[in-house]
Length: 89
Image 1 (cartoon, rainbow, N blue to C red):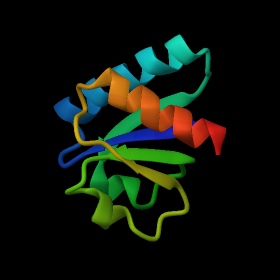
Image 2 (image 1 turned 180 degrees about the vertical axis):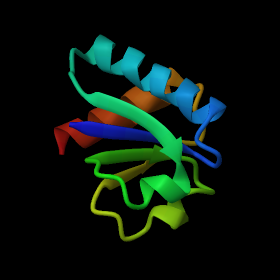
Image 3 (image 1 turned 135 degrees about the vertical axis):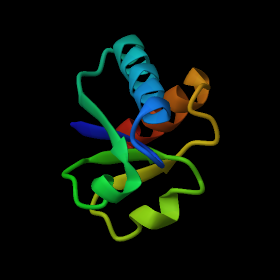
Image 4 (image 1 turned 30 degrees about the vertical axis):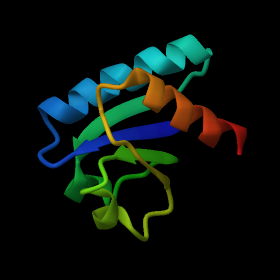
Protein backbone atom coordinates (compact mmCIF):
# COMPACT_ATOMS: atom_id res chain seq x y z
CA UNK A 1 0.00 0.00 0.00
CA UNK A 2 1.26 3.46 -0.91
CA UNK A 3 0.19 6.39 1.30
CA UNK A 4 0.89 10.04 0.56
CA UNK A 5 1.00 12.71 3.27
CA UNK A 6 0.11 15.99 1.60
CA UNK A 7 0.44 19.64 2.58
CA UNK A 8 0.53 22.91 0.67
CA UNK A 9 4.28 23.14 0.13
CA UNK A 10 5.33 19.51 0.61
CA UNK A 11 7.89 20.26 3.27
CA UNK A 12 7.49 20.52 7.04
CA UNK A 13 3.84 19.77 7.68
CA UNK A 14 3.63 16.81 5.33
CA UNK A 15 6.88 15.38 6.75
CA UNK A 16 5.38 15.59 10.24
CA UNK A 17 2.23 13.87 8.99
CA UNK A 18 4.35 11.16 7.32
CA UNK A 19 6.08 10.41 10.62
CA UNK A 20 2.74 10.27 12.47
CA UNK A 21 1.28 7.94 9.82
CA UNK A 22 4.30 5.65 10.15
CA UNK A 23 3.88 5.58 13.96
CA UNK A 24 0.20 4.67 13.61
CA UNK A 25 0.90 1.99 11.01
CA UNK A 26 3.54 0.47 13.29
CA UNK A 27 0.98 0.39 16.14
CA UNK A 28 -1.53 -1.28 13.82
CA UNK A 29 1.02 -3.78 12.54
CA UNK A 30 0.49 -2.65 8.95
CA UNK A 31 3.27 -2.24 6.42
CA UNK A 32 3.01 0.56 3.87
CA UNK A 33 5.23 2.85 1.85
CA UNK A 34 4.60 6.39 3.13
CA UNK A 35 5.82 9.45 1.23
CA UNK A 36 5.19 13.16 1.58
CA UNK A 37 4.73 15.91 -1.00
CA UNK A 38 2.79 19.00 -1.95
CA UNK A 39 -0.76 18.84 -3.30
CA UNK A 40 0.24 19.68 -6.88
CA UNK A 41 2.70 16.77 -7.06
CA UNK A 42 0.22 14.43 -5.36
CA UNK A 43 -2.34 15.01 -8.11
CA UNK A 44 -0.25 12.94 -10.51
CA UNK A 45 1.52 10.62 -8.06
CA UNK A 46 0.67 6.94 -7.77
CA UNK A 47 -0.96 6.15 -4.42
CA UNK A 48 -3.60 4.02 -2.76
CA UNK A 49 -4.35 6.55 -0.01
CA UNK A 50 -3.78 10.29 0.25
CA UNK A 51 -4.11 12.02 3.61
CA UNK A 52 -4.73 15.76 3.44
CA UNK A 53 -6.40 18.69 5.18
CA UNK A 54 -9.96 19.80 4.37
CA UNK A 55 -8.50 22.78 2.48
CA UNK A 56 -6.36 20.60 0.19
CA UNK A 57 -8.77 17.71 -0.39
CA UNK A 58 -10.69 19.50 -3.18
CA UNK A 59 -7.43 19.86 -5.13
CA UNK A 60 -7.14 16.05 -5.16
CA UNK A 61 -10.60 15.32 -6.56
CA UNK A 62 -10.49 12.88 -9.43
CA UNK A 63 -7.42 11.04 -8.12
CA UNK A 64 -7.80 7.26 -8.13
CA UNK A 65 -6.57 7.09 -4.51
CA UNK A 66 -8.85 7.19 -1.50
CA UNK A 67 -8.47 10.72 -0.09
CA UNK A 68 -8.70 10.77 3.69
CA UNK A 69 -9.38 14.21 5.16
CA UNK A 70 -7.70 14.99 8.48
CA UNK A 71 -8.68 17.85 10.73
CA UNK A 72 -5.32 17.65 12.53
CA UNK A 73 -2.00 16.30 11.27
CA UNK A 74 -0.86 16.03 14.89
CA UNK A 75 -3.74 13.93 16.24
CA UNK A 76 -2.52 10.32 16.04
CA UNK A 77 -5.88 9.04 17.31
CA UNK A 78 -7.66 10.69 14.38
CA UNK A 79 -5.08 9.28 11.96
CA UNK A 80 -5.47 5.82 13.52
CA UNK A 81 -9.26 5.93 13.38
CA UNK A 82 -9.43 7.05 9.76
CA UNK A 83 -6.73 4.66 8.57
CA UNK A 84 -8.41 1.78 10.43
CA UNK A 85 -11.72 2.62 8.76
CA UNK A 86 -10.01 2.57 5.37
CA UNK A 87 -8.28 -0.74 6.06
CA UNK A 88 -11.56 -2.36 7.14
CA UNK A 89 -13.41 -1.30 4.00
